[in-house]
Length: 306
Image (cartoon, rainbow, N blue to C red; front, side, top):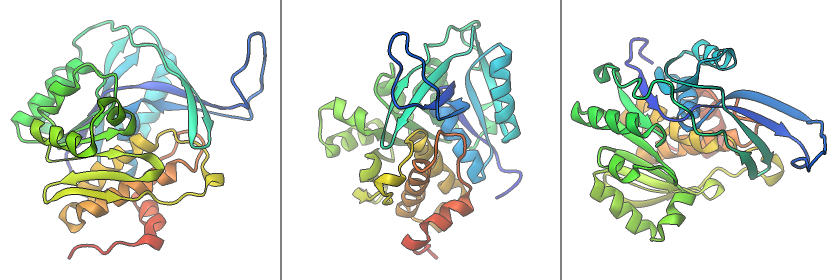
């Protein structure tokens, strides 16, 4: 990896994820002792950036960050991992509580941030970044930078999820759009119809992620392809936290690490491997290195393009 490579910019959500292993959520006036807990940075764009950085390429984050000591500790962790954080100041820390249950999980989401300085963070020099990734949160910044990166010819990718307020407008400036299964089901269309919609908006590649069922996708030269997920025995599935975000970050990292030396199919497989590795750990505290991902894939090696 070129040590002088330009960083990618990730824009979107930031939370503090408290993952707790308890037999059930406590009832009224009930007290439970957790068997295990972990606390770390979370949120779609933040997790994708953490995965991307751990795999090798440099990146920076533009996210809402509370102006308090609690959040400062999490930001310091990101800094130590090599991720520079551009803050959009918000009033107080927000925590998402996660209870894993194998392939499933229950979640109490953090409240929406209360901005102290609306519009902060729209002054970054887009030309210093190699690419832009969005999770659909921070809609004003997402749309502003999507248009800026499209204007200067830099790649823009979007993690397409339900509940985002300007997805349709964003897609007009997006090159790569991978949607969650939940988003796809809410559209009430077929896979091919969704892909036609993405293409009509100008996307060069995209797909739908189906968790343990794999990915259906298209790219330049491929009308429709299916890539199966890596098999993980049910008794080895611990927690799905970070798997989808890891897929998004790993797909971009694979392109930036290997480029045309690997095919689109291989990039997808690399990202699927990261997702499979993530579901085998508790919480989303640790993402794998590129060497660990390639070692994981060894029983399923795909030849590299010469």
